Amino acid sequence: MKNQKPGDTLAQNSADKHTRMLLGVYLIALFWILIFKLGVRFSYMDHRTVNLIPYQDYFLYGHIDRIEVIMNILIFVPAGLYAGLLLRKLNFLSIFLLLFAMSLCLEILQFVFRIGAFDATDLVNNTLGGLLGYAVIYLSRQITGSKLKIQKVINLLAIMATVIMVILLILLKLNKLPIRYQ
Image 1: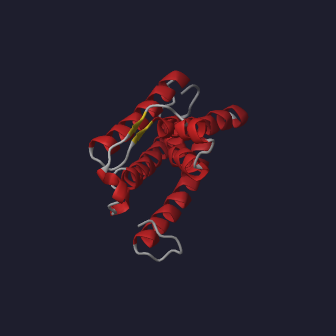
Image 2: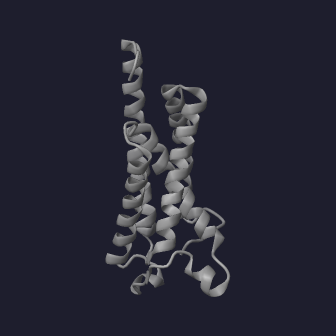
């Protein structure tokens, strides 16, 4: 990092440490949601399916589950945020490939372990969500010119979002929310 004072380097290292911890919590939650399905066995898990055509339902039936699309995008926004914050030396193509590979691995795991379908629509939406998160970091840095300030703000927001997410997941698991996932 150019023209940094020793205090700036310490502050950046501290921010990076916090970001890595938040990334760890995010990855655990992501795996619990996508791979372990919140600890619930769903009836569709016995059927392995593969959809290699993105948005196939839209093309075949003229509709798509918008909520699923939005959820798949949103669940990967943090991956892009963390990639943008921690992998500062990587270019856009590398970030894109990383986010795509991450989504591809999760889709393959869901298929192999019979916990979901391999769906190209999910692959596209997950990657899009990650790129959206990355774009937030990239544009914020371009506008403000401060990598450290952006990282501190994102870390603070991520802490609040992580606490809310963990509380909601626990309440969902304990059936204390008005929605049911079973």
